Structures are given as C-alpha cells and as structure tokens.
Image 1 (tube, rainbow, N blue to C red):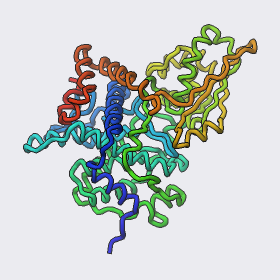
Image 2 (cartoon, rainbow, N blue to C red):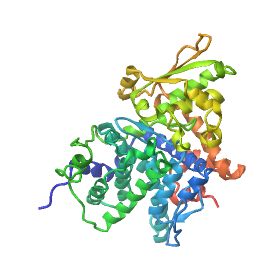
Image 3 (cartoon, rainbow, N blue to C red):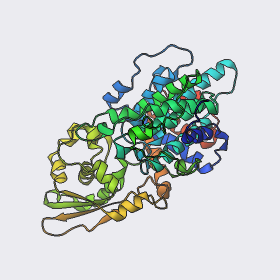
Image 4 (cartoon, one colour):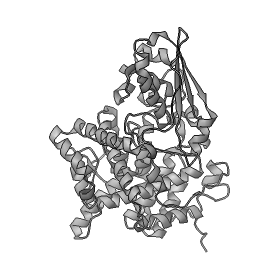
Length: 474
C-alpha cells in the first residue's frame, strides 16, 4: 500500500481544488490592485536592456494557442512564457511583498497564472467552450498568494540559506495544476514533485554574489511550476512524503528537522493584507526609511557636506538583509542596500529606477553619506514587525550636523503600501501603471489601456486572452 501524502500537501491541494470558496470582495479588489501593480512593473522593467535579453524566449513557438508574454510581442509555450513574464514583473524589485518569518513577493505567481489563462482561453474558443476570465485570474492570484504567504508564516527558509522562491514554486504548482483541469489528486502529485525540487540558495541576493539572478529567480520557479503541473497531468508518479521522509525529505535535508506547517487555515488573508510598493522601487524592509529620508531631504538641502552622521533605527530583518557597507557591485546590489537607498532619497528627494544605475552610483556624495550612516536594531521595531496585529515595517532616521544640531528623529512605522494606508496607495498604483504603459505605448493607447484595466465592473468578465491582447506590444 502506498504511503499517505504529507498533510501539508493534502491541505494545499484541497484548498487549491476549490476556487469557488473564495468569496472575499476585499481580496478580489486587492487582487485587482496587485494585478495593476504587477503589470506596471512588467512595462517598467522593459526599459532595462538586460531585462529584455533575459526575458526573450529562446525559441518562440508557432504551436497552437501560444501564450503571449505580458508587455511584449513574444508568443511562446506556457512554460517559457512563465519564465519571461516572471522576469519582467520581478526585475525592478517593485511588485507586491509579504513579510513574515519568510519574505517574498506573492504576485510572482502571476507569472504562471497569466500565460496559462491566455493559452487556455484561446484553446477554449477553438473548441467552443467557455474561456477563463479576468475573475478566474484574480481568484487564482488569491489562492497563490495565500499558499505562499501562509507557508511563510510558519517556516523561514532564509534561516537555512534558502531562497523564498521555493514557495513561489509550491504555490504556482498547485494553482497551475488546477487551472489545467487537474483534480485534487493531480495537485497532490504535482506538489510532491515541487517539494522534492528542494530550494535555491539565497547566495545570489547577498554580497559578494548579488546578481540579476535575483530578478529572474521567481520567473524560473513559476516556469518550473507550470512544467510540473503538465507532468502531473500526464500521470507522472510522485513522491508522497517529500517533506517528512526521514533523512531524505525537505525537512531533514534542508531545514535541520524543522517541521513545515500551515499555521492557519487557507482562505484569503494574505491577499487582503499584502503589501504594495506603489511609490518607489526599494527592498521592502527599507521602504519606511526611504520615506523618512524624503521628509528630511528639504531639511538637508545644501548642507550635505555638513552632515556628521546619519542614524538609522530599524528592525532585525532589515539589518540581516539590507545593511551593507563597502562597494556595491551593480543595480541588483544597490536596491538591497539600506544605506544606498537612504542616501539617494536625501540627495534627490525621490528614488526611481534610474537611481540604481552605475551613473547614479558614481556620484561621490552617495558613498560619502553611506560612510556616515550608523544602522542599529530597535527591539521594539523587531517585535512590531512580527506582531500579526501590527505588521509594522518601522524605520527612524536622525541626521546630526557638524555644528551639533540635528533634525530629531523622523519615524515611520507603517509603509505606504500597507493595508492601513491603502487609500494613499491606490492612486499611486494607477499612476505607476500609466507611467509603465507610457514607456511602451503611445500616449493615446496608454490611456485607453489604463482606463480599460481600471474598469472594475467591465474587466472581471473579460476573457483572459482578450486581456493579454490588450497588454501586448507590437
């Protein structure tokens, strides 16, 4: 008799197999906002030549019903399209965020969902059946956000040197298998393969190995998820205890025996509470530090050379991830450096994609300010970060000048993309979308697309392939 599946696989599969249980209007509307935000990220990412080279399909396909790649003219198979779409969405570190014991960007899962929805909608039209709609895309996003986010509440992969994209692979595998028509058993089988894939090392997110891989790693995970979904539907025999197998399972091999759990029931909590980056591209643990620097920038003015020190009080996760001194190798290194982001914000009063380039980093004032920064952990901020009732991402800045005067502490506990500041974030997301669209489309079409995407009532029942037709660039 075959062993029973690990309980975590059973719970995820049972949840993924029942999209009809997603009833939260708040989650659906937040998913729409997250979708607009991710679309903006994809269009903005195209401005970078390295991003375009990485995302371009190796072998564009002429197969029936190819998946279109968001924001481009590429058409390819769903597996390659997932990689390309994920690369575009994730390139600028500008899409939504989830912070818990593990960190991550749940809209990375859109990379698996959108190409499949496009392909399946085209196939449905060809056979006279009903195509999946934008509502189906948003519900799939809610499920993927939930799976990734609840796993992150219980297990910190980062503590074991592993990257959060393993959870993208798990969430995307479950949802992709269901989208392809898989049963609960098919989803369990696909998840068995997704877990035994193990985990990527976080080395590419940390000095001295930071590279652009951190911007395509999630696309790689989503692409793998789509492939595993197809294999499961072909009946590929699956490991049943990939987590708990003694000695060889995920828990013993990679987590030192730590037990992977789902610490709360799967529903729509994560989407309802997801964190957006509507204003500027910066690693999320530094978002409030950058906003505080914006507020202090007018005070600094032309006194930059008179600054004696800049104190930054922050939380433990920020210290561990983005507290960096010394040389920064590339843009991917700079957007994960708290001191660099704060320096740019103080000097320019803003922080945009171009501020991470080699040209911007060559400004000698940037490193001069970095050398004057002192980063310390505030235990209260670390506590509030993990408190589910607060979920703060707090930072505070104080600038002291050579004459002994100082600015006083500028503290911000809740970032602008937090659910408690959602009314501030929504117009910024729409502005971000328009900025991205205008970078690739003429002004008239950009406005037309922006208005169409913002039309909540008319968008939900739009077939998924019509949505992609709206978002391709020729």
